[in-house]
Length: 305
Length: 261
Image (tube, rainbow over all chains, first blue to last red; front, side, top):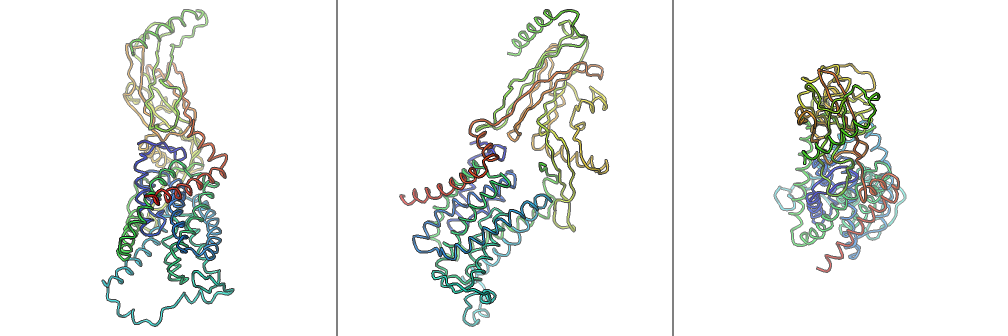
C-alpha cells in the first residue's frame, strides 16, 4: 500500500507505518509508556527525515495516551492537581526545548545530541528497570539491601524546598517546585527527542517525588497528553515538520495497539512486563551506542538554507 | 506507436519548414523536443514516474541530417540553496557532523542521458560549459575553502544524491532511430520536490553543440496533498490544532470502539 507523505515529500509503504504504530501502541498499552522512544528511531531508520519523524511521533503519542488517561481517570488514577503543576513545568520545558532544538539544528549537532540522549537515558533507565525486576523475582541476592531502615518517602532535596502544598491524591505534602522541575526536564526531552517521557516520568514520580503508586501511571499519561499536544503545536509553528498523513497512519496502528496492550497487561505478571520493557529499552540503547561508533552509512547530509 | 510518432513529427516538421520564408532560415538544424508528460502531480499513489523525453532532429532544410551526431538530454529540477555537512570522528570514538560547506544553487534533481558515453562525445571544456554529466555539475559553492576539499564535498554530495535516486547519469540512455527520432527514458523517484523542471536537449557533432532546445515539466502537489503542504506552511496554527485534534479523536474513538468489544 503506497502512501505519499506530503510533508516528508516521499512515498512509503503505509502498511509498514501502521504496523510500526501497532507495535509501539502495544508497548504503550502494556507498559504505560508513550512508545515515542521506539517510533522516532524506527521512522528515521525507515528513511523519514529526522525532524519529520520526531514531530510526527509526538502527535502519535498524544493519541496513544488519550485512551489511557480516560481509563485511569475513571478509576481516580489521575492527580489533576500535581498533574497541572507538572504540565506547567513541561510547557516551559517544551519552549526551552524548542529553542535548544533550533540552536542545535543550526550548528548541525541535533542528530548527535538526540542519539547520545537516547543512549544515556535508555541505557540508564533500562538497566535500572532490569535490575529492579530481577531483584523482585529473586534472581539476585538482595539481603544486603533488605536490611535498610524504613523507606524514605521522597528524596531529601525535595523535602528541603520551600512553599509546601498538599497534593491529596498523591498523598504528598511537598513544594510544587519539585514536580515543576520534573515537568520541565521531561518537557525539554519531549521536544528534543519526540518522546512522551513516560519512561523517565514514572520512575521519577515513584522514587524521587514519592507519589502514591495508584496515581503514578495515570498522572504521567495526563502530563504526556498535554506536553505532546504542545510539542505538536510548537513543531507546527517552528519546524513545520508535522506530517499529518504519517501521523494519521501511526495513530491508526498505535491507538489500536494501545487497546490491545492494555488487555495483554491484565494477564501478564508485572515483573515479567518490567523485564520485557527493560530488555527492549537496553537493546535500543545498545543499538544506538553501536550506531554512533561505526562508520555511518551516510557521511554527508544536506540541509536546506 | 513510435513509428506513428515519427511520421507525425516529420509531417509537422515538413509543414513548418515549408511555411518558413527561405530568407529567415538559419543554418542551425531543427530540433523539436517533447516530453511524455508536462505535469507530474505528487499525490496519493505517486511512487515515482518514468518520463519519456523524445523529439526529432532535422537538417535546416527539413531533411535527414547529414553525417553522424550524438544526442544528450538533461533534466534538471529547481535549484536550492543548501548546506552540506560531513561527519567525522570525534576523539576517535563517535561520529558527529564536523565540517560543512554551503552551496548557492544546487539542482534538486539532475538526470542526464546520452547516446554514447559523454567522454566520447565532447571534451571536458564543452562538458563543463553545458554541464553535461555529473562530474561537470556547477554547484556554485560559497565560502572559501581549498579546491581539494571542495572537490571532496562535491563528490560526496553527488554520491549521496545518486543513491537517493535524485542524480543519475545514463551513458547510453538515448536511442536515435533513423538518424531523426531520439528518445530517452528518465525515471523520477517519489522524493522529488515540487517546482519547474527543465529538460534540455543537445545535438552534438564533432565535439560541438550544433543545436539545443528546452521543454518543461511542472511538478506540483495538488488536491489533498497540495492543501496539506500549503496549510502546514501558511496556517501553521490551524494545522497544528488539526493534528492535535485528530490524535485526540482517534485515541478517544479507539477507546470507545474497544469498550464495545
